[in-house]
Image 1 (cartoon, rainbow, N blue to C red):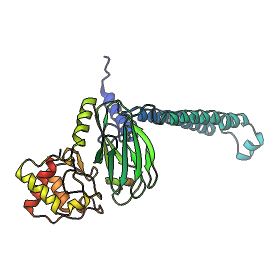
Image 2: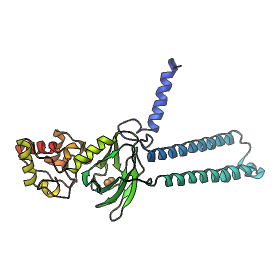
Image 3: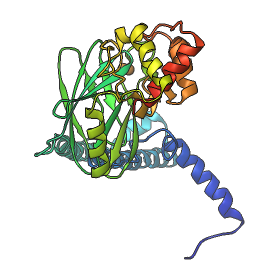
Image 4: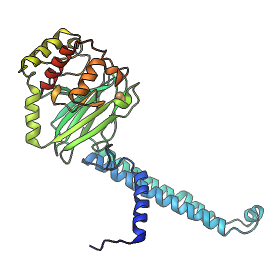
Length: 336
Ligand code: CUA
């Protein structure tokens, strides 16, 4: 109803879009924004952000108007102005009383939000997340699940996250779901996430942790209760038996080569704990903590020499024959 049109509106819209685009560079695009919340925790943070933004905008505008008024109404030299005096009331009200009221109010609102961001009562689902250079180990202690770089959660339910680090300090941040929380070696921090609607929410390590800090992404996959339950049931099981001969040879290749020294595939001879657990790797969306999409081509490149994609990571190039590589790819893809 009442859609405006006309010659000027296109230009105005473009200007507005550009301004909004600069202001909210991450909104709506592929990178997630804390101002596009999808859970109660992030929604609270976004509300606080907007409150602070509008207060700052009003203060900025008022100060700017005062500067303009002062310049416009200025009469006489500096010495005359000093001699004439006056303006104390403005300084006391505008410089002391109003800021004191505004800052106290903001402080109280901040404290209220801080309290509200503690783990809700009755949260019965716990996920342990351990940061490593440069990937995330994910464990569901009660369900007996070990995974990496992906957290599956049921929609609408709070999930407690117990965070620690295996090496240096990392920081867990899924902007659309929750605030940042550090992962500190030898210490556990607790936070929580809750997703309001199904979807995949991208998170990122938010504390510089070395060369590949930027390629340390984590995905939170929020699913309806039944989909989540079937994911849990599947993840609890050991690796599926290799169905076809190619995958069976791939399993042998994995066990015989150095893969098994660093990775675990439950139900096989691979029991390494240096790198991510691969028991259900085929079901994961990315390779190398968000470095690549989990496709056969990307996976082949990653196995042959992951250093070209994510230099400095702990996985050395794998000198496999082309046949062995194809077998291994078939096996890894079958690990759903
Ligand atoms: Cu981990 Cu930055």
